Length: 131
Image 1: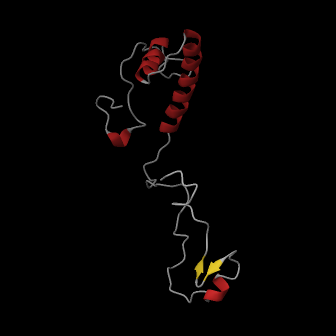
Image 2 (image 1 turned 90 degrees about the vertical axis):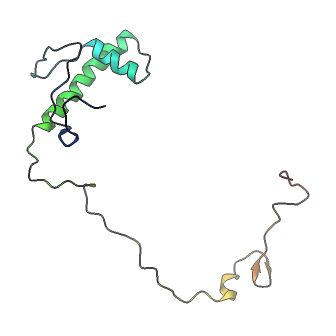
Image 3 (image 1 turned 180 degrees about the vertical axis):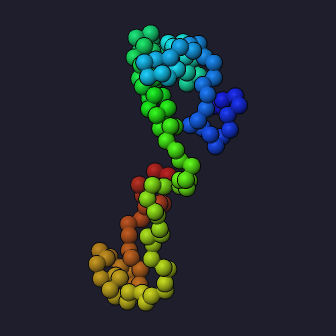
C-alpha cells in the first residue's frame, strides 16, 4: 500500500493518512476506528462479524502502537542488513575425487546385472497403469 507523500525509505516514519477516525488513544497514538478495520478487512476480502471486528480493532491498535514505538529508535548509524546473523556458504568446494570401486558400489545391491543395479520394471510391465 502506498501512503501519500511517503518515501519508501521512510516506511516506519510516516504520518498516518486521514481515515475514519483521527482521535488518539491513551498512548497518544492515533486510535483506530471500527470503520478503519472494516475497510482493511474488505480490502483483504475477509467477511468478519462486528464482534470479531471489535476484537481485531483493539489488537491492531496494540500492534500499531508497538510499530510506533519501534519507529522512535534512532537507526541513523545502523547499516541495512538482509539477515540478523552473518551468513557464509556452508558447502565444501567442488573437488574431483576418486570414485568408489564398482564392486564396493554394487556390494549391497539386492540384484545386479553386470555393472548395473537391477530394479523391478515400472513402466511397460503387465500391470502398467500408464499405458
